[in-house]
Image (cartoon, rainbow, N blue to C red; front, side, top):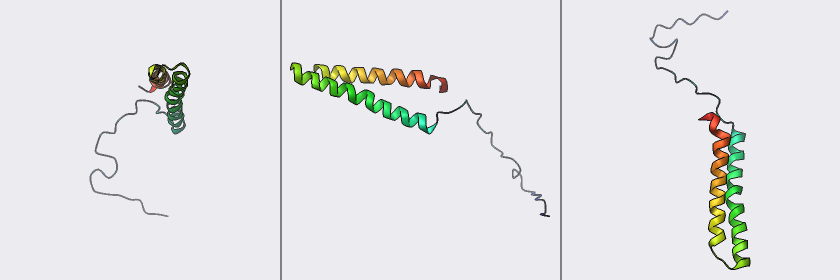
Length: 87
């Protein structure tokens, strides 16, 4: 049978600092990885479509910037709607 550990040093049986309380469940690694992939696609895909439209219609860089704005707005909307429960 192992001897019981009776330590006399203060603070060895429990932490002396106040432990922060949890604010709820945090997003998992899979959710964060999926968010990264989505944000990359949400920005790059409208940029590519805008570039193709600019080449076809000869309106460079109008649709390129429009695609950038669409991607940023879509990415921001998805981040807000998907992760507002963690805020």
